[in-house]
Amino acid sequence: MTALSPLYAIVIACLAGGILAILAAAGTLALHARWISKLVSFAVGALLGAVFLELLPHALEHGSAESVMLTVLAGLLLFFLLEKLVLWRHSHLEAEALAENGHAGAERHAHGVDGGRSGLMIVIGNSVHNFCDGIVIAAAFLTDFALGTATALAIVAHAIPQQVGDFAVLMHSGYSRRRAFAYNLATGVATLLGGLAGYAALASMQHVLPTVLAIASASLLYVAVADLIPSLHRHPAPAATAQQLLLIGIGIALIAAVHLWLER
Image (cartoon, rainbow, N blue to C red; front, side, top):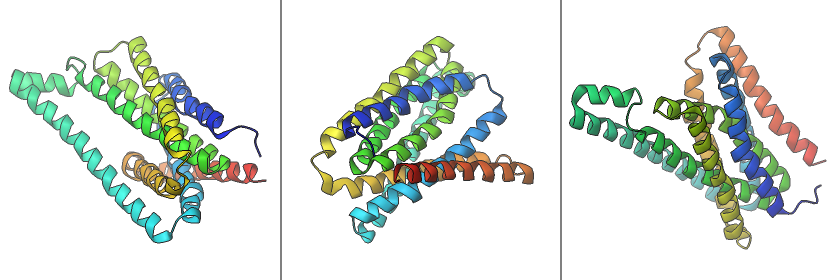
């Protein structure tokens, strides 16, 4: 359906997934918190749609069901442990601040006045996360153009509210708005680096793509279920829940529409 080579498609999608998501996030900083919540709901739908309508079906098409599902299960547990490691590191820094400066030091750390250490953790964490997103995009485009497009859309959708939160943490850690934007823009380049690395590693290793797609499914599913959905529970009112379900449905419908359009 397209004349784009997988490499060109990966480069374009990674630039969109990394840099354009940061630019869009910078524009949403002035929005009311209600709009950020709406973006989160939409992102949940896009991620779930990408996992269950695109990534998993393609993984099952090219690999055995037992192997794919075991990989997804192992991936979910791996991302759980990785998040635990990040949380442990954060609590360790708080304890370190308390030991160095007493209760006042811990309070300053909790409020972001920590010499930029929380901001540095955000920059490092974002770089790793974006690099992995690039690998996911590369694996998807090497499998199928429609799959790559839907996956890139889902990644951009969840990257925007994530970047809004990261901007807030960076500025709360003492960074100026311009410096916070520059650091996040730099981490966006990691998406492109991940895409190029993924292409170089996977282009001649088609037999491992089902495993990579299964891990990608676990990654996006974990982000949706463990990171984004719990934030939606802060607004339990029936009207808010109905709006969240509608926006989740719109996110899923977008992925389905892209799939149908590209498969024509």
